[in-house]
Image (cartoon, rainbow, N blue to C red; front, side, top):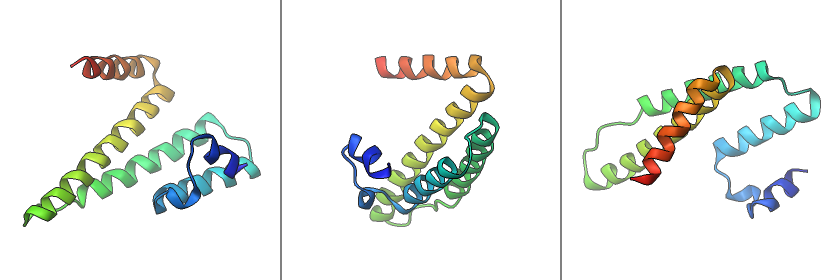
Length: 111
């Protein structure tokens, strides 16, 4: 089942970073052992948000050009992940908040 899912998106398990692998394994375990509930997803999403916030807080000030490039990229990716998680959380907790995020995203695409 896992390989079929990854093949659908032209991915291999080896292409995933360690955090993605862990998340995928947790989801597969959850799917095989129990039913997925909205409350369970909300709880798991809250854990993901806290984890990204901690990673984001650990991004240090740049002391060289190379560290600036690396930290800037990492900072951007972490902020994008956090925004996606927050959008999912809002979608699960309040359709109005999700609509605002969608409208803002569409507005950003136009610019």
